[in-house]
Image 1 (cartoon, helix red, strand yellow):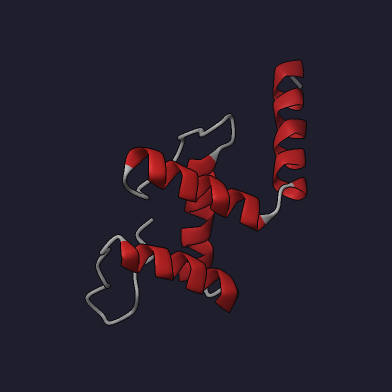
Image 2: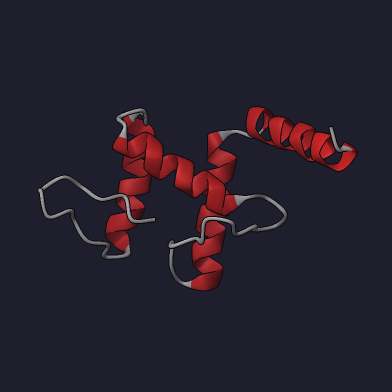
Length: 96
């Protein structure tokens, strides 16, 4: 295996397993404050953290009912504050 790949993989594992959800949420709030929206591009890095990937994971977890109620409320409250739309089938869309 390529040494750079192994190093990147180790860094990603540490990043995912040691940083709390609220830390990432705080990064999202900082991003919104700076850019004025929560539509983070998938591969976007914010302060050297893969915020776009984290947001994508939250969307996936939301769609698959794997996000706990506290987290849904935090994200949904923020989404509503930005005036993000509802899905046409009546289910809330997590459009961050």
